[in-house]
Image 1: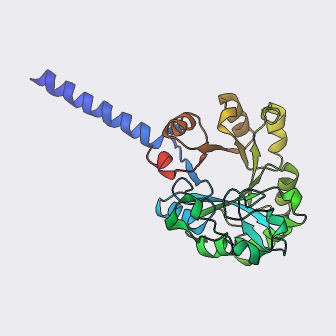
Image 2 (image 1 turned 30 degrees about the horizontal axis):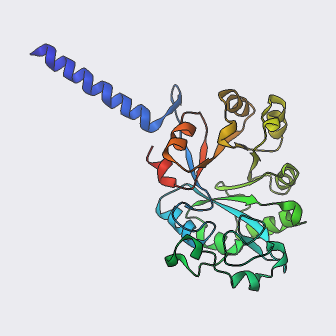
Image 3 (image 1 turned 60 degrees about the vertical axis):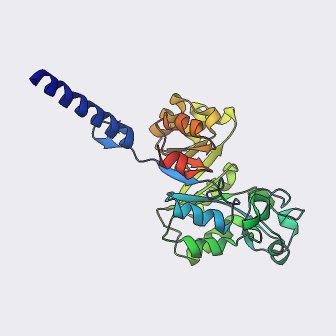
Length: 272
């Protein structure tokens, strides 16, 4: 009888310990890993990307950050949209930079995702800052900044206007490394990330070069290796990988010692 009791106690303890390990994912002895969940273009698996619907859904789902894409209209307004044209995510056509804000506002940016999203508008950058400041972190991606000379300074001015130029839960990223070097000079207290999708930018030397101005190293999940993650961390950077669109992809990314995951479906990561 005593043997069965002891065995049962050991089994329960083992299962409990395993569950705790799974939930907290220790990085090393005495340290607990916290993984940031980035709602990619908002909770875009459930609502039209880069709209208030998607951002509100991300807040509801308790993601750590929303990721937004910033471009500029013909008349100089900073707007939130991913593609450099409006063709895919609205009922209109043409380049973002060639359309005025008034023209952009006439477009339906939600109907393609479902009738109940019809009428969703392309948001202003300042609208997003005002609505979500203090509610959720904001990861700002400069989309094709080469098309918009001076956009870095405009981003800085807006962040200062909302007292977000030194905020710990603001991250700025881009595939344009030159732009990110500039952003670090303009905003030394804001975290800067480099988006990486090419193998040539995963070498030890490349990672070391990025660390001279970047706080986050953000490779696509297809490029991830343990050596890459280790090198980035040794150089003092955090690692954010993208983009989770399935539970299997979430499992894959969570098997690496990374710091953040960008996902269209925040619950795929939050439920791990």
